[in-house]
Length: 281
Image (cartoon, rainbow, N blue to C red; front, side, top):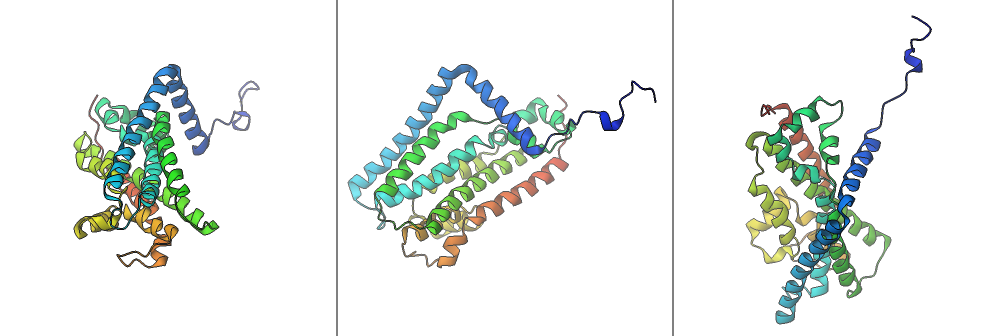
């Protein structure tokens, strides 16, 4: 070996951790979105206005009828806020899975497979939707309003349970986006049934579980555990007696179902990747 040839020890370390790479992906996405700041502001404001109008319609319902199966407007606002905050975060962070069909159609996923990094990391960091801050701001506003009009004796446990419910809801919706993306390995396009579970699920989760029929409650408890990340922990925080008879231990541990759903979704994703065949583009 000549004196001018670098030894393996002298070569620069070009390795980068998965976390640092993800942060780099996100920074690139944010810088691209900030190129058109006026458009960003208008889109974020539009998100805020649309979702705020939805809550006004909900408030008008309570103005007319007073309560919903003994649930007051501030209590429903608490449910609304938790599930909406979780969905807004999930809609912003794993946005790459939501737009995954275009990677299949264009053949971009072939390039992702060639890179020596996890496909989940690459798709996760492909797009970060900052404009979802409009939906998030509205959800936090409604959640704060609901808390301000409720007589809740806050403890560290209740605060932790509320935050766990939001995190579990974020994991659940993220898992649904992953499942929708996985189905694209066979269908190319996204499946509307999954969209009904995500965007329809957030609408269903804004109301008490008791207003739905038993078969509908079973779907959103045991198949898509929406009630586990919203309704049951909310019962514990609000100090309500659940007419469905859920025990306190279930109400406090229910949000963990969202993380379990995400873990199963990632396993399904691995199956889909193994069965992927290129579109040939």
